[in-house]
Image (cartoon, rainbow, N blue to C red; front, top):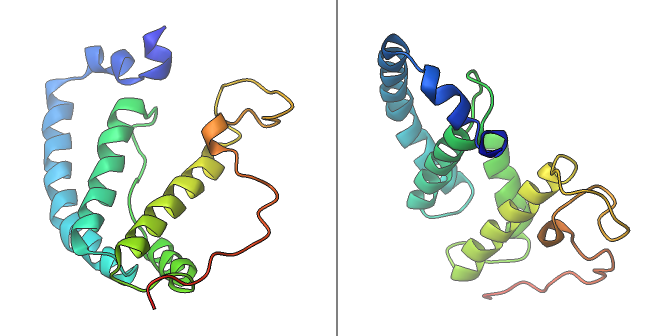
Length: 150
């Protein structure tokens, strides 16, 4: 039952030593590339550089536990950083705590919308696509928040 939600329990028992050595080399190479890239993408999005490290390391660790494919690239991309800066830059001033908070909320909303149809929670009138209740956004949001920090 747990292996359905945690695929690592299925493949960890058959993981071989030669696979580990190849994965360790790949991890070193990815880390060498990931650190400067994640710092740059955070700055591109208008966020502090350390946020880029968090945003690049967390998906790798989470996918290790919950992922089902051995060959998948998970990480930051420049387009996402530019879109984040563009969307939040209209509402907040860069460098403020509100800007960071808005980026975090935008990431959560985007993730919820991305996962909305694939969550196995069943359908109901309030959740027609089977989305988790915390992913359903109000459909009557008629106002746009004013720009904060100026």
